[in-house]
Amino acid sequence: MRNSLSLRIMLSGAVVVILTLLITAILLVYLFREHIEQHFDALLFDHIEELVAATSFTPDGSFKLNWSPQDPRFQLPNSGWYWEIRQAEKTLSSSRSLQGEQLNVSKLQGGGVLTVLRKKRLLLSELMAESLLEIQHFSGPDNKLLHAQLLVITFPQANQEILYIATGPISEVDYDVSRFAKQVIISFWVLGSGLILAIVFQVRIALKPLKAMSNAIGDVQQGKKERLPENYPDEIQVVVSEINSLLAHRTETLLRARKDLGNLAHTIKNPLAVIINEADCIKNESGQLIHNKAELIAANLDHYLARARAAGTANLLVLVPIL
Image 1: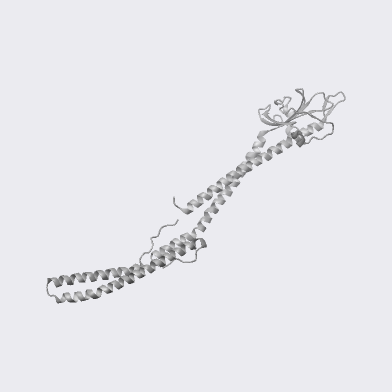
Image 2: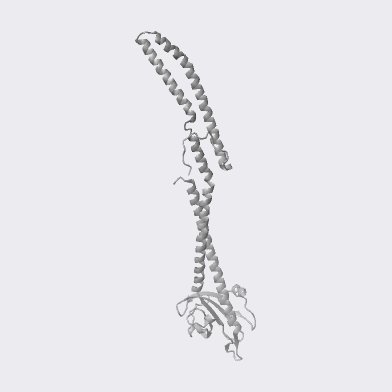
């Protein structure tokens, strides 16, 4: 099996299929995670925008939140979905899911502050370009790892910067990616199995003419045929034609050798017949010895002539398995 051509083709094809599907699966999972994280960020930013839109100030400059995000996940305690609004490390308002606790955010690295007028819409592209929006990962009150977006804004009515925070649990991203990865694995396992079976089937079909050629060579070896059939695919027909040329040349050589051997034998037989007749006329031991040796030579000639005649139908080739 080590030298099997079909096994080599099938193994190499299987390796290519497995590597291709593996790389594709990794790329798909990576792209899906990027998509989910972008969607996750967009969702959090929508909540931040909603909080900013709901922000107003009383005539004396006090903070007021006209409404809060209606996403039910912000109502569930320890859900990982939190929002919080701070001013000078003091919590102005927060989601019910926080239960009065503060989020453990780090010091902002961007250092940018956005000054906005009322009714001005915030664009995500503008915030990112100005490095005003930061993304942080930290543990929440329930020790869940959170994905957070932080935005610092200075309103004309406020004396200090206001920090808006919206978070969601990273476990939800991991869960979605894990589900997608499992579906990809199952799908690609089915696809890979089908492709490998297709490779095996194709190899069997493609190498079938070689098996037929091997059987035809066996027929030539056994004397059932004088040459190989001429109905093979073009790629194999070249080899078949060369084999047939070799068989024709060998047959011609054997026929010529048989003819020369026959001529030589007939040339020797006539003198031998004369020697045998003359030996019979010698009535002593020498005559008898000459007669016996001449008869032996004649018998050997007949023997080798018979072998030469049989050589035309004897095995011409040694059959070697191709597969």
